[in-house]
Amino acid sequence: MTTLTLEHVWKRFGSFEALKDINLNLPSGKMITFLGPSGSGKSTMFRLVAGLDDTTEGTVRFDGEDVTRLPAHKRNVGMVFQNYALFPHLNVWENISYGLKLQKRPKAERRARAEELLDLIKLPHIADRSIKQLSGGQQQRVSIARALAMEPRLFLLDEPLSALDAKLREHMQAELCDLQQTLGITTIVVTHDQREAMTMSDVVVVIDQGEVQQVGSPLEIYRKPATPFVADFVGSST
Ligand code: ADP
Ligand code: MG
Image (cartoon, rainbow, N blue to C red; front, top):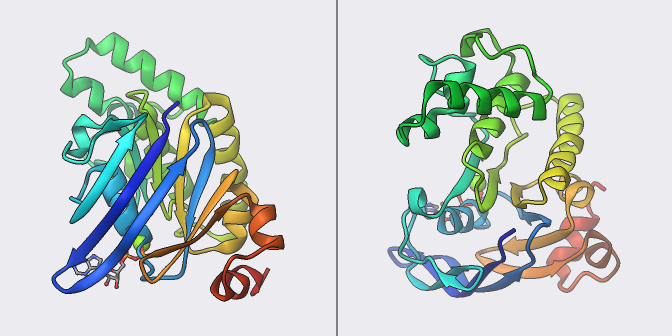
């Protein structure tokens, strides 16, 4: 269970300020969402937390430890994206246990870990299937299992459900919450969907134009929006 801290974090692309002095101290073991409209800086913040990109200024800490200059593969984070990004030439269990293969772990151990994770995501019988045989929802679950295979410190998902139809999306929201609670892992879900954020989160970080507008529980944000932007964005279409 890892605490995530951002201190005076800036990200510039040339002269464009994508993130402006972000200061966050997020609790461990919770379901956290980064909520904001398209272009607000959610994925940029996600990438800095994951180690996929460098901060221009400022510090990222996991449990107080400065990880600002550590690349993604040294941060021990599990990542899931909208487009699944599975390896099409590997079958389901090989996809899930790919990270263990890089660590040269024995095949029996990799297979057993993959089966354990398939149980966890409620797809117990598909270990030997090809990725192409799976539906979009199944592929997304497999990418979730793959992200969890190395027991990451943080579980990071960028718009994980955006490609799914509305009914499946609601179902997966509930399953992700169950999974987060079962594992007790600090989880960050990026979303532009305020209803999704309100349904899923312990803590919502509302972001607009590269600035954090508010951090709070769904109820706090709904009842006491800190800025007109939050009132409008959270209040609309709920
Ligand atoms: P969100 O995920 O909230 O939709 P992003 O974090 O992807 O938004 O982008 C925030 C802003 O930063 C956007 O204006 C985007 O065009 C800009 N941006 C993101 N990545 C780059 C990049 N590599 N180069 C230049 N501008 C970028
Ligand atoms: Mg994005």
